[in-house]
Length: 128
Image (cartoon, rainbow, N blue to C red; front, side, top):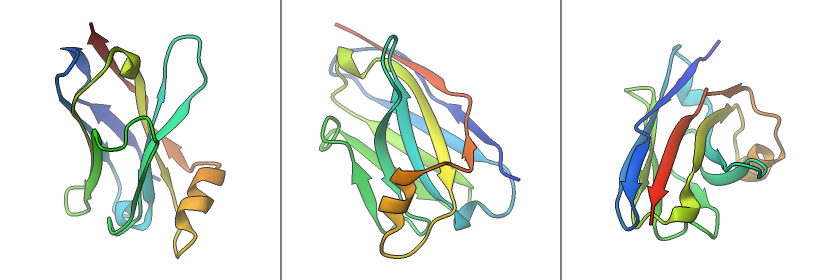
């Protein structure tokens, strides 16, 4: 069993930065690919970034590429999302998710879902 707890959200001005953290309980964190998703009011949840179990492979949505960086520290059971050059359209509740997928096709499998675990979300608000 894995529990995910996000933190680091808040209110920031456009152009600013935030770093989100997703802390996982349990001793099997390193076996899971991890990802960040977000959901803005009135919109569907969308993929933001994903990272393989080892941290050696990452993927990003086009809307955040070059501005956001996903990373993980398996020794600390934590995945991070560094968000720079924030825009008002980045305003959303951000969720982390875990899925036990491996291999060269890990990202396709990850995007196919379903996900094994979700966090409760953290609000990010970017003011203009």
